[in-house]
Amino acid sequence: MPNGEMLRNMRQFAGACRFVYNKALALQDERHKGGEKKLGYAGLCKLLTEWRNGAETPWLKDAPVHPLQQALKDLERAYANFFEKRADFPRFKRKGEQDGFRYPDPKQIKLDRENGRIFLPKMGYIRYRNSRTVRGEVRSATVSLRAGRWYVSILTACEVEQAVPQGPAVGIDVGVSRFATLSDGTFIAPLASFRKHEQRLAKYQRRLARKVKGSTNWKKTKARIQRIHARIADARADFLHKASNTISKNHAMIAVEDLKVRNMTKSARGTVEQPGRQVRQKAGLNKAILDQGWGEFRRQLEYKTAWRGGFFFVVDPRNTSRRCPCCGHISADNRKTQALFACTRCGHEANADHVGALNVLAAGHAAIACGGMAQSGRPMKQEPAEVTQAIAA
Image 1 (cartoon, rainbow, N blue to C red):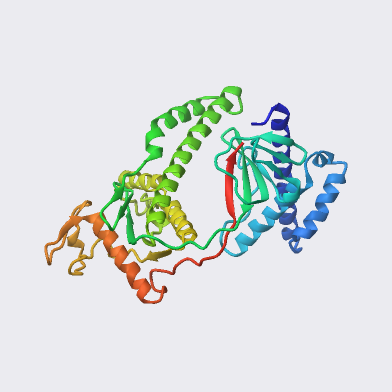
Image 2 (cartoon, rainbow, N blue to C red):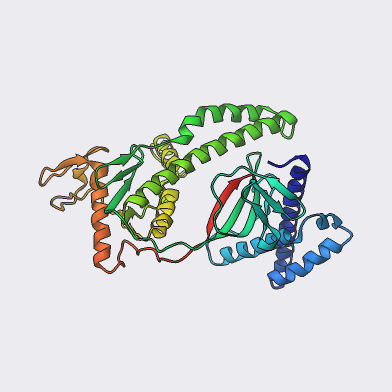
């Protein structure tokens, strides 16, 4: 809950970090074009000292030095991710996109849990709204701007007892009509947060297109659109956390399909020479799949199962919806409709998603029989981890 002066400081600090990041990225590109080697983090920090003391950018001194150094560290990490083929080449940051800064030194951060306030260098004490109780020893604090609101994310380290897995094993089949079907017969209905706000979002996007770019009304409409997107994302995140938390808490072993969501949601438009078929139907299916958040659901299940000492397996999705769980017969004719499974050999009939979950569970048991290493992947390692606790400012 910052006041006006604090808001100005936070925007200034975020802008200084963005400036340092872009200036360092431009310097690295210039050195690359000139045939010189890329500067490391230590070399960039020396240049940062020159920039802060130089006559061209003396306003950099107004911002704390540690967040500026963290911007250079972020650039170094972006280059490392690119060279290791985990991400695209680093791009220049734009104003209004992922604005924020990070304090890495815990000695400079003072957290007053009882009064709900935090002390940050060159800003003083700021009151915040607790989204959860902050446990453990403070390691760092990240201040960020999202949809017009400022947040502080506090990283802490705390000792936890070794968890003992509880509950039976379960296989999970994800889908569109049913978000997640469990092998015990239960299922979780989809939330479809984007679909609920789609018409309202489209209305304000049309308004934005009719306004003069950069005008006051254009900025107001853009801010409203950002708030709608934030509401959609928050609703989806809340739904996924609750679902993954319930499943990981009540099951000692979880098996899910190794779905390639990026490949599944490719466009069907094709090319001019070979145009695609049923493009609109495929576009609607892609939108529904992306609205579910399958990848994030799997990620949350994976680390929450590890927290609770359980086992997590990723199995090959091939023929999970075509194999009969009774006789093992595999045929495309076993699933003539989206919802009904009917084996052509033994006549077994059941919900298709439930059959898929049973086959996923069987593949998970096969992975255990192979010592945890098979086509299905391997269980998570039990390692202590730092917990990031997000607290709304």
